[in-house]
Length: 425
Image (cartoon, rainbow, N blue to C red; front, side):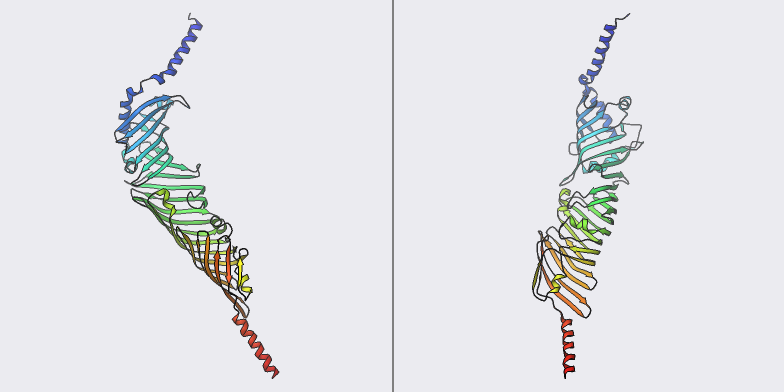
């Protein structure tokens, strides 16, 4: 009968050898076989720098410095293969939850990947799901990324879709192969802030379109923002320059939280409808939104213009200077807007509130405001009007008036005086 003590010692030694074996196993001895399998999978020659194994934080094989075709085409710093029962039982045939980390691809390789992955489950090596961490795509004059995502495969081994998540899961991009050289693209976001310019926050945003080697055509834009709706379309062309153009319509947006992003003091309330066209252009995508070219029309209904009192200057026929403060209620405020890198121009502004009406043109540049306004208030037979010069800071505007004029009131007074003189005679 075996000695229990010797049996226990033997078991411990065997377990120790089994646990240590992956650390000393010459993985490079089957590197050529693995390179051939990977080459069959994507249709390009694969070279693996070296292979190692580690237990922490979980047992994994790691392929280092993997090159496909050449370093300019595709270079993967690490390919991590978890040691699971599925991967061990299907070694050389199929793998799950493989991770590619710190990879760089050429644009041609990324666009041609659906054609490289053969839709044939009987040959080569299949991967059911591929996790991507910190991957980038090189363009002619810039690089897109790094991004994180998941590459899903169909049962026949062809690419299903690529899902990229950002901003702690609040935004998601889904890319799906379509016709040759074409991709369907869908962007979904909830509770998401624009990552460029001013942080406009969308309750929901969806963009749908198609992409190819030349760019991206967004055929449908829909979003819920500040209690209203936006729709539109856009086109992004990439190459030597990045050019983004499009048109957006808004309906019933609460304008105060939007304007507060630009000016927390001088702002407006009310509900806005607008029609805006835009163009952005840059040599790199991360600088694309630095140079806006935006033009459009808007109308705001049933609101209040804060920090702008257009009524008070009408009360005096003497020159006045009104500095900051006050407000003007309106039924409608409409006009044109033009935004570029240096300034915001508001043209043909018309504010109406009952018998009060004001027309203005204003330019905002470097936090300063300049412009002019012509106002008129009709009260019965009396009409009061004035001309205002608008200067100062956007946060502290100055309204300068040469004094209000009351031509109709003078006519009324002269008429009454003539009647009195006629009676006296």
